[in-house]
Image (tube, rainbow, N blue to C red; front, side, top):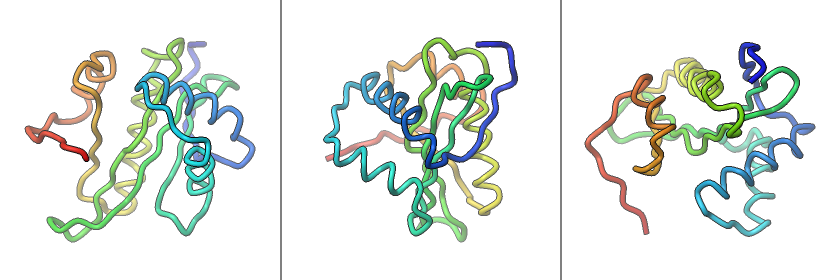
Amino acid sequence: MSGVTPRVRPLEPADRAAWERLWRGYLTFYEQPLPEAITERTWARLLDPQFDLHGLCVHDGDRMVGLCHYVFHPSTWADGPYCYLEDLFVDLDARGGGCGRALIEAVYAAADDRKAERVYWATQQGNETARKLYDRIARLTPFVQYAR
């Protein structure tokens, strides 16, 4: 980290190469290969206003060092929407400098603007580095996630 305050902004079309570098790092971290078509579709959806899928990036100086994607959806338990923070990744060399926190706080602000009643996300149980941050800025719920 350069010591500069992390700067968060929405993804733009010109960010494709930097976003893809981080996206591939994220997929590698979670050992999740994806077909190229999914990466292409994800990028297109992030930029298409017809989808309620949003992308943010964080910069340390002039370099993009992190990304996050979030989506709003209705809930059966609330009047307002919920906000699911689906993906969050910060370059290894930029961790510990506030980039992850800045991304989450930007999602919190977007959720507040939309009057979302909940912001939530999941991570691997053994992702101890990220969980140290998450434990400071959110509440761990007792729910267990299942997937098919």
